[in-house]
Length: 121
Image (cartoon, rainbow, N blue to C red; front, side, top):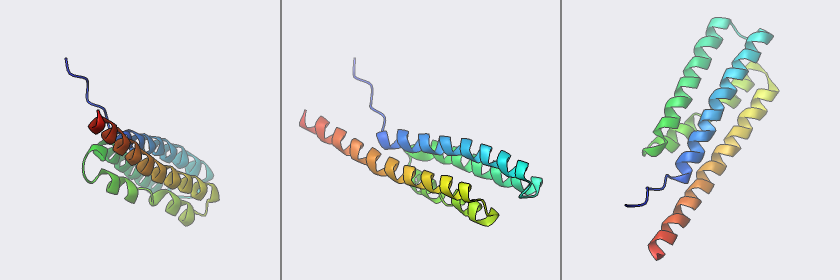
């Protein structure tokens, strides 16, 4: 019986970051609604669109454009904080940008080291 194929560490890390970011978008939308900083309809449309985009990008992480899509989707959260004038949203967005960079780099390094180990064995 063959050993199960290992899943890509980069794929797992990146999909996890994007999934967590969906939760942040949900909670940020609730906060912005409570603070009455945006029109509720605009807020609903923007948050649902961003949440769905992040979810789709998390599912695309196994494909060739997954990292690019995820990288592009790191822009809206800090940008929304700038546009709305909410400094904590900017900070949280920048934290997720940093986590994204770490996930892409560290996950890629783990995948390369695994491949090297398997090639030596």
